[in-house]
Length: 129
Image (cartoon, rainbow, N blue to C red; front, side, top):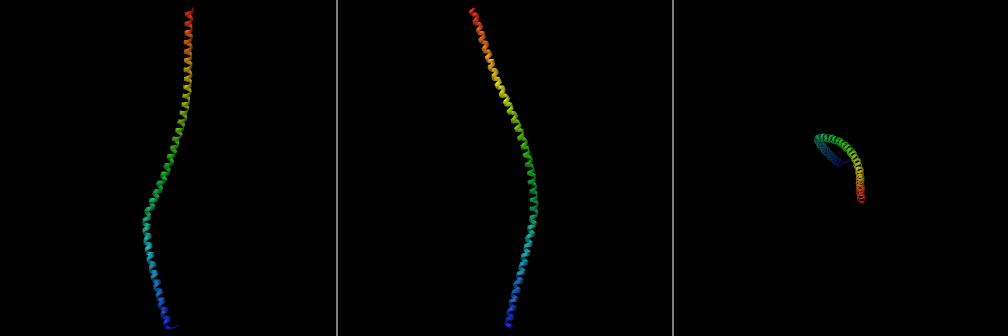
């Protein structure tokens, strides 16, 4: 092989090796930066994870409290329903009593009218005799 070919191959190999070394060094710097960034992220994530756990517990507590409140609302709704039923019966009874009162009033009025009629009839009868 001619000398100039060996020199050109050696120079090309040297340039290639230098490029590989530069690439390896750049990759090392990238790896170091990535490690530093990951360390920062890890430091920042620890408190956030703790806060996320606390928030999760708060949400669970709120969900339990909401469930208890819904049970209370259901109990109050049942009581209101029972009271409404009782009021319905009371109003029905009162309505019946009102009708009975009206009937008694009409009967009392009729009795009074008949008494007056009979009384006048007797008094007229006394005038004719």
